[in-house]
Amino acid sequence: MALLLVPLMAWKMDEPFLITLATKVTILALAGVGLNIALGLGGLVSLGHAAFFGIGGYAMGILASHAQNYEPLFSWPFLFEGSNQMPLIWLVAVLASAAAALVIGALSLRTSGVYFIMITLAFGQMLYYFTISWSAYGGEDGLSIWVRNEMPGVNTLDPIQFFAVTFVILCLTLWFAARVAQSAFGLALSAARQSEERVETVGLAPFKLRLIAFVISGAITGLAGALFADLNRFVSPTMLSWHTSGEIMIFVILGGVGRLYGPVVGAAVYILLEHLLGGISEYWQIFLGLLLLGMVLFARGGLIGALLGREVAHD
Amino acid sequence: MSLILILEQVLNGLQFGVMLFLMAAGLTLVFGVMGLINLAHGALYMVGAFAAAAVAGWTGSFVLALMASLAAAAAAGALVEVTVIRRLYDRDHLDQVLATFALILIFSEGTRWLFGSFPLFLDVPSYLSGPVTLPGGIQYPLYRLAIIVIGLVVGAGLFWLIARTRIGVQIRAGEADREMIAALGVDISKLYTLVFALGAALAGLAGALVGAIQSVQVGMGEPVLILAFVVIVIGGIGSIKGALVGALLVGLTDTLGGVFLPRLFALMMEPASAASFGASLASMLIYILMAAVLLVRPSGLFGGSA
Image 1 (cartoon, chains in turn orange, blue):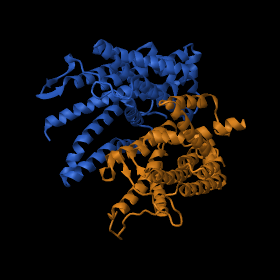
Image 2 (cartoon, chains in turn blue, green):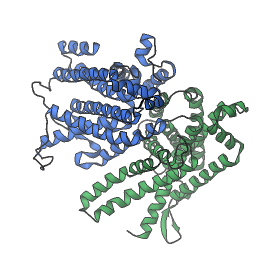
Image 3 (cartoon, chains in turn blue, yellow):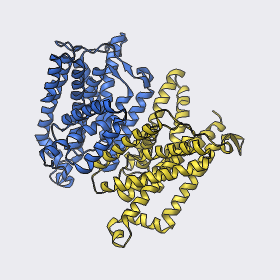
Image 4 (cartoon, one colour):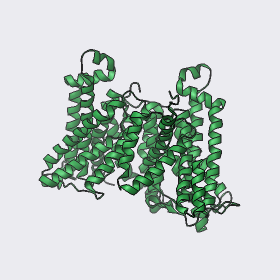
């Protein structure tokens, strides 16, 4: 709720910076909601979600840069000149990151535990180095888009309207995530996290459940990546670096693993901290590190868990 | 593409692989014995490099600098183990990932605060600089050759330590059955601190040795850390032998791929696109290697049970 109030007040007071900050929180929360489906529901500790975030970003960057330079992206089987229409970009971002998640997931899910963490990390880094050496789309320097992409009926250049777009997407995704968690699929996935043998015994395939969860998770994070790129009007390999994976994971943990609103709270607190501590000291990440360490060692269950005084049942 | 070039690149690959082995050995020991995934291993590599650069700056002695890197990284490792890592052994991997990620933030920003953002430089000592002529008339930098030798000597020492000494027996026993060796009267928490400090010292040494070739800067440990992960995933987590084989495989694949893939593609397509396509593919080559190994053996080449 506060997430909605802050930008509305900022809009009244004519503080576009605050609106942009709130938009950033919304988009990063969306990425966290995506990861939370794999991490919280499926128990899949993926340290490679930056890959999907980046693929979403590059989907936007590539489509929009072709549209902006009037160079056709491909001319066969039909002439396609790129696009600056958000709905189409979102579709491409979701499909591309879902496809990547399918491939990465199918390979990584053959393993579990520490191997899974390291392999998702390694695949993330693989794409990171690929984008760095991919000189056609900016390589290490990234890709700038001059004008924010368009959406029918909305003036996306107006900060509050762009915020509204991202906020609606976040709400829809949260609703979707809640539905997934309560669906037969979500319950089976949760069960596979808690006891793999029992799920196999009742005739379900944990591998398939996890792969589907991983693909959904990657697709949502990819959508967040496309929005994030649109917010900054810039994509660069930094979006795919493993620090991004770590940050998305921090949003989820900070708020509370497996909680529906966990990533939203986590992203809001993280950005707030970045903003406040960043103003105090150039070395604010030391404090972030200490805080995170304290959280892991002493306050399991995240902020929501600490506030409500009870832990969510994970494992 | 002459034979000399190939041999030179093989040596480069060996040198890279030996460095990766020093990193991966610590990681795989810590995982094998304590069951801990340590993302902060790259931070210890950085600590070693910075300690070496600082000591070399004060004293001008490269040997002292290497000793400082060992001591500083081991001390930092022991400190971190006693204060933080010890609490993480019986936690799930997610908590370990987060806590060690937090340690990276603290180490990186702390180092930036102490030394500033500008890279430091560690000079190769005069007695190790310059080329040396190998049998067959190959000119090769003496320092890189020294790295290979140091790495192999340290690796042999490690194998000796694990296979032939009392501590090695305890470490191997700790991998096999934690409760049992505690019941037999081995001070397990001291053993854990020792193993962690040993792994940290090896990482610190690697950092210092590489620091003299590249620059010493904040964040230098992370690319190496991820390659070390690839190494131990390929080799099998917990296996020192696997770490050695994996490290050499990754080192050779990465080096040879980076040099020869663009040339190979240049035979088939126009030079400009061959160079960029070859470079892109070369940067992904070790990950493709990893995926291939995992398809055949999901727990790595020498991994028993994950």
